[in-house]
Image 1 (cartoon, rainbow, N blue to C red):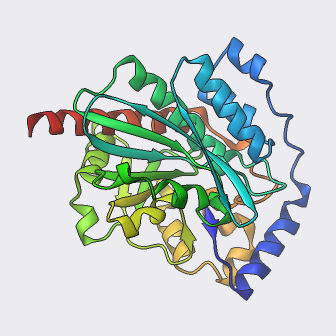
Image 2 (cartoon, helix red, strand yellow):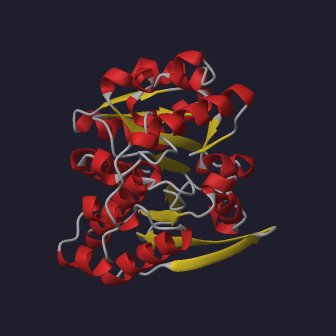
Length: 308
């Protein structure tokens, strides 16, 4: 999740980084060979955490190869930034749904929750959908690069002609801590979109608390790169249900000096963009919940599309 900072925000980030100096050193990244012996979303979080941008992209490719999933590597250049998106489509329909999870970390952080958690959940969902592909829908998993540098991979992908007319894009951020999910950047038109309604139905089916929220002033994610193309876009974040109102206050006013006190922040922002964002903070149940949400959202949209 990329964030633009004011002066107060920079001060808060510096204080947060200093506060995290006592965090325990994260475990070494899991080797791909170790992951393949017992693959799971949690194991893949450990594969990605602590690796650099290139290492994460290569790990996603290796995992897709191991699962016999066809994908496309999409290199791009923006000024001096050279990145690579990984794109995998599943399903036979003409209508396109995009599920995005950025692979790139904030430098010098393990970046387990932001955003290895969502990449691992998306990989799990993709594997499930490969086993039972949607019949009336095509789902694109966009493992984007350069999100933390200004949504660069998503901006590049949004230029592709085949994204025009897509049902929508859901960008998943921070999927590893919590028992609920929030959908954000939901406007009046977006609220009634097929994608958002399907996501709510999926959450309700599994008894997962979910909330719709409006614009987020400072925090941004890949879905925003598609707005100018007329594609419905939302961000999706996993969080503890009890943290919902605290999180809303935080994103509405991130410069509030109150947030300099680490334990007063919403739980998912206590390690955000810090060395404390390591795999030991991630809950396997949250990853499983996210993967189920992705798959069931696709199933609902596929069924509804088939009836039209």
